[in-house]
Image 1 (spheres, rainbow, N blue to C red):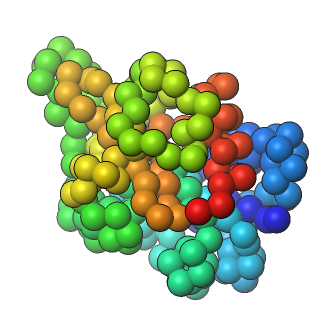
Image 2: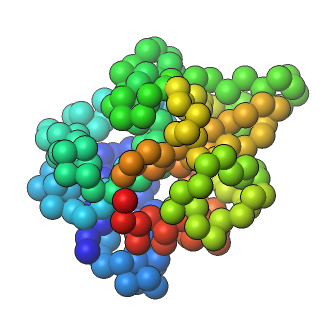
Length: 212
């Protein structure tokens, strides 16, 4: 079993690599590799797409790496391998991102990425720090995760899904903010599971052993 974390120059992947390697070792889920090689992505049993920064810049970086998106799409959509998007990697699942300019997403889960607008004007954006998860729909990746468990967020935009069944969890920040999305073999987390202590490590372990 082999998990590929896609490296497309979208941020420091050291923390994610270490967290996934740790949980793969603890659960017997095989090896974890960080790669920008389309051949490795296509051969992987699971695919992880992280991302930090602005939606348009991350999308451009991904497509600047020749063949990387195409390998990801073939592995995930054509071959049905489990996929996890983290932060901007989750947002790219959407139909359209509206950060700075309208940018087409993968359209793997219908919806739009829009700016966070708390109803309380004293709350700051970006939404940064720890927040309690509210679970909306059951999912194998959430096994052992409880209502109110904490996750670590750093973002100014969030994913509004078209189908409520595709929102697995949210947080309250003077209004709903989507925290986890999913359908079929796809799951995405707005927060950083690798920085979310026991809760995040539990979800990483669940993903590494998920058989959709």
